[in-house]
Image (cartoon, one colour):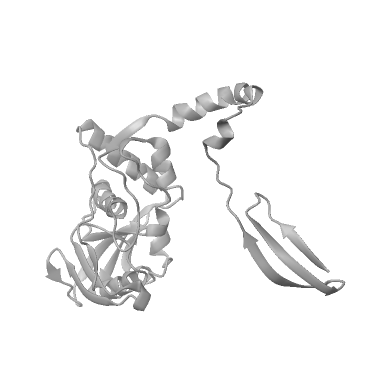
Length: 258
């Protein structure tokens, strides 16, 4: 007997075979993606639109306000990208409100969940980029631990690092090894201490960066106001007040050795 189990949302189906009652084994997995785009707007349901109108008004009043502008489309990708650079630099920018002066910041690519489109940035855009409950935090690493962190970043093919970090790595296809690491033009001193700003998800050693969990003098505020989305929001609002259009670029912070 062969049957299929369909998962809700029509994204996947599992093919299950049975040779005897209550003895099943998985024989195959199939999946498909349902694209939701303007094709579904060709024949709008007027009753549904009327029903949703008051809810849409409330949602738009929260999500639609413009909080800033960006000069071009931004996307997060390894080894380095304009958007991952921006997120890391925003952590440095926000550190001043915590009486911290970190040497560098780390923001994981996996924590950046959407792109930015050239032009206006809304609160919805910010929420889409940082939908998780990740909060800013600080930790002190020895130079040896920092080098280990950079090795872990190299192994992952790159992560968001703040301005001043200069890493040369090999391709992730051949293991992602760290070739060299400099900070603000200087070699990493194994005996020195370095203050790192990041998010609590990484401080716990997640995403293959457990060197962060081994640090000392950790500061990890728990209040919701410390969520990264609010720091990003504050940054854009501050830039907008100053009339600045945000224009992050790829700068060679992480280079792959040819």
